[in-house]
View 1 (cartoon, rainbow, N blue to C red):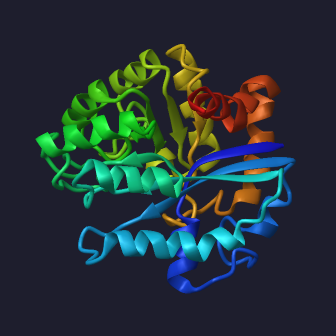
View 2 (view 1 turned 45 degrees about the vertical axis):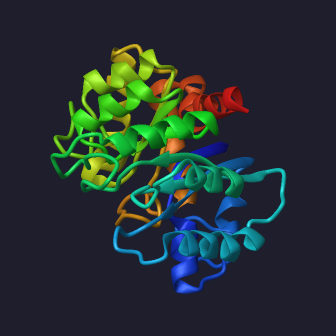
Length: 279
C-alpha cells in the first residue's frame, strides 16, 4: 500500500517533546512508515497565536526534524504551515517558500489578522488578501482548513491553488470544522483536493464506517477525483485509527466496499496528482 497523508502534526510534536522520529511514541514515525510500499507525508508546523517569536519557532521545528527525516525514496515528505497569523509581508511568505513550505492555512480555529476561523465570525482582511496573493507568487497552495464559511469563499476566490487538508463533511457530521456540500463542489470546480480526517469528532465515532460514508457521499457528488486522506495524526485524540499503520486496516475495509482502484485514489493518486501538477 502507498499512503499520502495531507496533514499530520508529528514534526511539531517530536520537537516540542524532544522525541526521535524513529521512536514508536508518535502516530507517525520512521518505523511505522516501514509498513508501506511508499509514503508521502505533509508535515505541518503548527503555531499558537501567542507565540512570541514565530519565525524562530518555525526554524527550530524544521532544524530539529529535518535530520530525522531519512533521505529514502520510499519515505518522502512535504512541509505545510498551520495558522499563518504572524505573516505580515511578502518577505514572510518568501521565507516560508525558501524553507520548503508548499501549503498553508491562514488561521487555526479562531479569527486573526488574516481571516475568520471556523469557530469564530470574522472575515478575510485586506492583509489576508495580500498574503494570499503572495502565496500565489511563490506557488504555495492555500489550505482552506480552519476557515469559517465566509472567509473560505473569499480567500479561495483569490488563490491560484486550493485544498482542504483535514476535515469531515457537514452533510454527515454537523461540526463547525467540517465543510458543506457547497464548499466541496467549489473545491471540485477548482481542481483542488479534500483530505478526510480520521478524527472521530469530524468523521464519526465508528471511524471506518464514518470514513466509508464520507467517501460514498463524495462519490454521490461526483467527487471521487478530489477525495484524499488528511489524518490529523499527532494533532488530535484518535480512537480506532490512532497510528498510521492502522491505515492498512482502513484500506482493507474500504477496498471491500469500493474496490482497489477508488481506494488507491483516496490514499495516493489524487493527492499525488495535485502536487505533481504544481511542481
